Amino acid sequence: MDFKKSLKERKILFEQNLKSFMPDEEGLCKTLYESMNYSLKAGGKRLRPILLLETYKLFGGKESERIMPFAAAIEMIHTYSLIHDDLPSMDDDDLRRGKPTNHKIYGEGIAVLAGDGLLNEAFEIMVKASLNLDDKESALMAMNHICEGSGTKGMIAGQVVDLESENKDINIDVLKYIHENKTGKLILKPMLAGAVLAGASKGEIDNVKTYAKNIGQAFQVMDDILDIVGDQDKLGKNIGSDEENNKATYPSLFGLEKSKEIANELIEDAKLSLKKLNKEDEFLLNLADYIVNRDY
Amino acid sequence: MDFKKSLKERKILFEQNLKSFMPDEEGLCKTLYESMNYSLKAGGKRLRPILLLETYKLFGGKESERIMPFAAAIEMIHTYSLIHDDLPSMDDDDLRRGKPTNHKIYGEGIAVLAGDGLLNEAFEIMVKASLNLDDKESALMAMNHICEGSGTKGMIAGQVVDLESENKDINIDVLKYIHENKTGKLILKPMLAGAVLAGASKGEIDNVKTYAKNIGQAFQVMDDILDIVGDQDKLGKNIGSDEENNKATYPSLFGLEKSKEIANELIEDAKLSLKKLNKEDEFLLNLADYIVNRDY
Image (tube, rainbow over all chains, first blue to last red; front, side, top):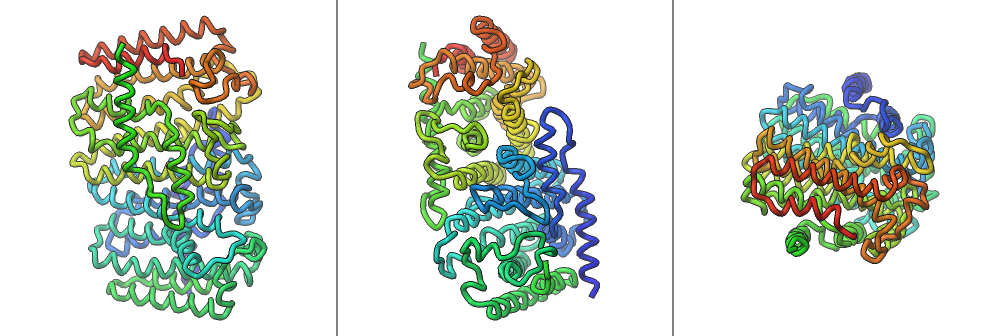
């Protein structure tokens, strides 16, 4: 299976582009820019920007380089959320992707500001890109999707409920709310942004929604599973932290085997809704499979 | 002088409008919304949104209600910056506008997320408003000004250098950098946003720039002065905190009298550039005077 190779190619291509959006590490504010870049360069799967770019291509988008700022913005938003999540007042993590977390290197004050900076920068580069696009309405619709995904009814809401659920017994509805918002929205919304930037129809967007929601949920179920059975080196973070923090997870609610079944079912449904689009797209089909088969 | 009355009228009108942009305090994420609203409702002069709206009107803008989301966004950005500034890892303040700071009520984790939420919400309401405006290019230009003002070459940069300058001897250039970015940009950029939303010409915008830069600098000089001679009850915050934190300020570098002179000169220049526009606008002229004469 050549999928891992094609995923890696896209990751490398995106990272080359991402560099051009990173601030130069100079001037009175050097520390801030270093801190932002430290976390942006820390790696990761780059899944969210790749999903945006692939969905754009799926619907016939031909100018990937012009919408690259939207992909970079998504990665900045994801990165800022990790920096703030890792703070002592939140998850209090020392390690992220095998490296010390941002505040461990730069201190808490700069880490808060680097997160703020990345969120602001994400909007700034999208706004500047939109000024250069002919179809400003689609650009604004794409930005609207991304704002909603990262916002107070999206990713931030998920993080709040996650934070407040620590050391509490929560039911499946609350767990789903956390997954849907904390992780799911920033998988769903970049795909919808890619779709509207390419001019997809409403009906087409509905199928993308089903695909994205399912892979998002499956991704999170797998994250929970990997926190138990994963390889610490490959994951680049401490395993067992969910259990240690008394976090409700799919395995803690349903057991390991049932959780794997749930993930598989979600992925099958995702692939089905993609096939309904009648578009040849091996990459997104294989990506769905990859999500349940990944080991990091 | 009726100026205080007309300032108060604008403040009340803006606050009535701001309410409609506040999240309903319900659902699983209730605490977050309460925390955001707590700081939004804490008062303040509402100077930044008023400046945006007044500049819009100065250049003939007639649809204040349609650009109100931009004004609300500015206040959300200002409010988020205060919440994060007050955190223990930054200025570590317990009191803001006479009330306990956000993290004192809701805890540090929620305070970080409430700040993130307000910044995201600011962009979200501007994007949604832009989708409803006919002139999407001007809307994007206005958003660009606001992003630049609050961003990593604007307000956040100022906050970083301010944070890193504590307990250090700094020179006038660094102090000016802090003022220009931390406070100045979020006075300048809302005015430029108001100007482009009303379709002001490039020449007109240059005069607005001079006015805004000068009142912004004077505002900060006065803040430094009031931290020494101000009335704690009127200011709603502890006075003497700059000296306590060994912060470089205008009075610490130039003395109190010379600092007042500097503020007065800046205001005279500001009024001059406003008069060059040949527009009848008592409010913005009086506002300039108010900045050096205010006692809170």
